Image 1 (spheres, one colour):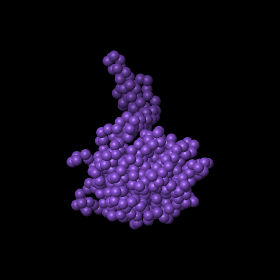
Image 2 (cartoon, one colour):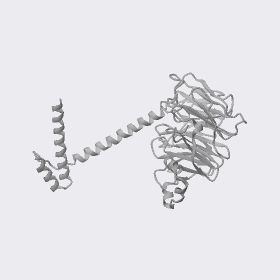
Image 3 (spheres, helix red, strand yellow):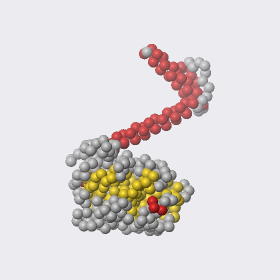
Image 4 (cartoon, helix red, strand yellow):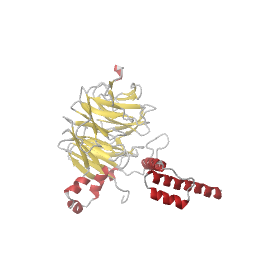
Length: 434
């Protein structure tokens, strides 16, 4: 066996040298090619060929693909499998408790901040405002800024400050309040909805972009949207009870042909499940509805999901088995979809007064915790997702109501958007010192 391996290696090395000589001839380096050919006594002679270049290019692409695949596997391992109460109820959490997060960066709009979103890889954040503007911020730059000592930051030149500034794009194409934002799952596109009756698509890969490259015109105020995991379709919820489905490429609109499927009041949130088999909507009418992702027919309704109160948010778990909802009753509930029942209720928020504005309940990136901002105290309530055990409160530091919260899908970070004109980026750096 060792002899065969050595022989195989010798033959491959000989072929490598012949390819090098052929490539040198092909690229016009005749002198080098002849010298190397004489040195290793090539027989038969090597004709000019570009094969080595093509093999190297193919190998580099394969190597990069393997590295990306390994990185994706590492990210998945770090995030974990998420919540699955069929198999575990007491799984140890490696994620930091939300009360340990710290503000790393604050960005200001000229009016109330009403919408936020993370990109799928967790590297970008978008915020939208009542002033009709949208900002896109780089997460690594925000973390770097927060770690830079004040005396060092003060000595930065204007050019250095521009190169390290976390806000990488500011978009102006809406005429009224930006109500919802979502990043395209695979392309460098940000989608926004507004009170100006439009849904807009921005290509933020271009540094000079300010305007949208595509606009969908609606007949009502746009309140929420959700992109299909493929990015080919978009669901749009408006002030009208009927949900819209648009083909992203053609802007063709579809609605369910069953009038009884629809809500009876404006839609407050819509979300595709990660596996795209279904999507969920909630409404001012107090109902939560589940829709088939292929036929677009409503196959289940949770009537009065929050005891008749307006339902403000819906979010699927990563395995699409559970749905997290919140309502103006300040309750957060986890629904098991296979049994169509409320499995867990997270209580304790809203104890200081009735909720006036819509808020969202979200999972952290590992789905070990549930987060929900308390309106009256501007504190963050959090619970163990599996047993509903209350965690420590976190003061969110805003001077007005928190109108939107969104957690990173990949790491210990979240963003809060407030009527105090500010968006705060929160992050937990290390586990040390706990």
